[in-house]
Length: 405
Image (cartoon, rainbow, N blue to C red; front, side, top):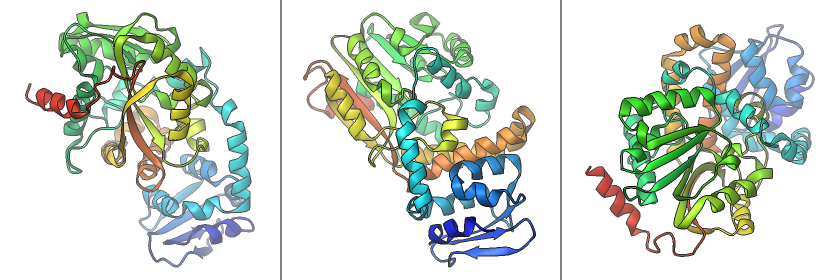
């Protein structure tokens, strides 16, 4: 290796990375203290240069293609854990600094989500067969951060608690009209409809909508939910409540004002909105290349400064803000464990390369919520300062009432 050692010597400060070159020679990086010891084999001489110039993308692609493997009991989880506790060393390398500057310069292009392209970007992730997601999600197929009353709660319990927490914040009354922007497989729409409101739920993923309609029918609330295949910018009418879970991450930094402007337009007098999305506690950045290319094209996790700056421009009041810090780490840990237990079925259904890609994705985002800057925020937004109750005790009161139902 000629190039990679220059990077790894600065990168691995905690734990140890053992690299087996294509010729069989072992090269050691790091002292082994403060982290795991990981053994990685390179099967291709070209990986020396490729990993040096773009390690975050190339490591994932090489793992997907079998050009990079792990040995002596090491796993992709161990490798990405080692990366997550040493990420500052990687980011400090001059070549990596230049690469990150280029990503930031191009981020508005990477995140361009005009009508049409936005749907294609979302469909590339969500229109996999529902049977695939059913293998590792909870029984409701909720594909967003759960809400853990305790860290050892089951995934089912935590997702039930999340639905209840959101409904409590919405402070619903029977007969209300609710718009849901980004409805997934319909779990929240069904839960809210069971509380006696009418839900207009929009999504751009055809497979998810088909599954949602089946689930609403089975739950006996199909007459109280209207599912549309529609971009959020195309939704019309006014609503007592607007709710959006796991959607803003797909909007793109160019379109934040459109997103919040749409919410402002949809709110009836006295109404308010509840937004649940992933954010970062660090300054504005860019989307990691592997996630951008293979998992969420057009996606971006905003800094909170970007969220609130957009709200200022649009003119919405923030009536409440809650930060969920470890809840998504616990959620994705459940997903990863479930995925690993059903991996053979994933391979049979989707192929080995896809299974490796998804495995890499789940591990990377899990550890991003443990050691990185990612978290989840929940906002209550309104057009007038007192549309959201001015004392937040109502959330606890509503939540307790829902738990007794």
